[in-house]
Every structure is written in structure tokens, then in C-alpha cells.
Image 1: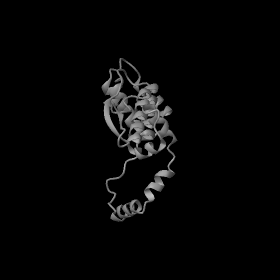
Image 2: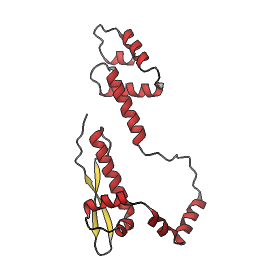
Image 3: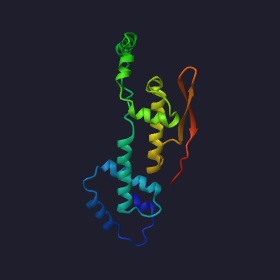
Image 4: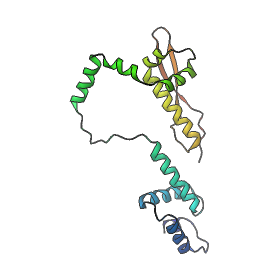
Length: 178
């Protein structure tokens, strides 16, 4: 009914279309179908076809599997966890933990900007390189999917005196697709 209200039907048999939709999507969740059809209403210029709805469902599934999991707002702050983390760092175990991390992918990423960088410098700048790698992965996903990133990426600058990396935000070469 919502689709019929938004598109002129020009004598089409909407009852037959709705029966075909029900047969095709009978195993799908009602909320998923409603969201997919609303998505089709926002982007389709013609009455949505089964292919349009399937594409919308696939995009919804892809977004659900790639988006980071959100922490609930109802999570209460536990001061004991903060105290244990502080004690962990004071006991010198943080350095031990950082040494145990597998950073091979991060080293490969860092060598794109700094070909001669050592694994020790990558560890020292772990957070900066992780942020850059996450943004690069989002930009790669943006080429495969509509608007997967926010249109920004990181540029790394290494201070040779201190050995620390500074991140600067740059506009990426994103192509806006409709």
C-alpha cells in the first residue's frame, strides 16, 4: 500500500505483485522488509522490483555486519575496572602486553608511509597507526558500497626527534554516489 501510494501504478495489478513479494520474501523478518522497502522508496524512481528489494536487503545485511558494535548507554561505570587498569600499567605489564600483540598488518600499513620504520616505532605509535588503518579500510569499503566512510582519512607525520607520529585529517578522494 505504501509503494502504491508513492508511485503511479498505470493499470498494474498490485495484488499480483504483493502475492509475488510475499512468496519471494516469506522467510524474511518483517522489520527487515519494512526497512528495505522504505530504503527503496527513498532511492527508487520507479515501483520497487524484487531485485531492488533484494539489493536493499543485501546492503542492510552488509551494514549490519561491518558496523562496529555499540556499547550500551546503560552500562554503569565500574571504578574497580579503572583501578585494575591503572594498577596493570603501574606494574609494568602494559609494555609486556604490547610486546605480545601481533602487529604484522600494522607494520605493513605503516611502511606505506614510512618505508624504513622499525617494529618498535610502530608499537610506540600503535594508536595512531590503528586509527589510520581503520580509516583506510573504511575508504576501501567506500569504493565497494555507498557512503561507507565519512569522507576523511589520516595523513601521518613522524617527528624524527621524539619518534612519535602525529595524525592529521585529510579529505579523501571519495566519489559521492546516489
